[in-house]
Image (tube, rainbow, N blue to C red):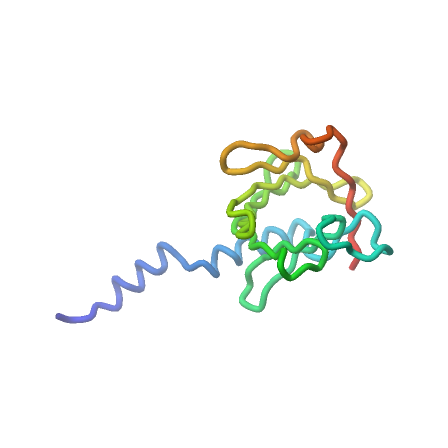
Length: 147
């Protein structure tokens, strides 16, 4: 039995690696201007579990992660990013703690702020729709870049 490196190399090129998928999401997020820390009020300290401070960071191996309130236990990988109509950035975020993947649609304000337009699960359930929280019908807050 002989080893055939060419077919193996072609197979790897066709399917890529998880790191390359993360790199594509990272590139799109970076081009869109998402990387960094965002908050309702950058002067206030983050409170665990509040979700008022979020950050989009790049790991040493090039993956994009989403972290809430600087909480190391609330760190989630962004596995896909795409830009849709109206310059809406759509992120697929794997949330192991909740055993789900969610899609989050984000828009930019004229002042440079961002806000969520939608947040939906793979099952079609929404926590945010049309820029409003499903639970209380309040609009999602504008987040400003802190760094």
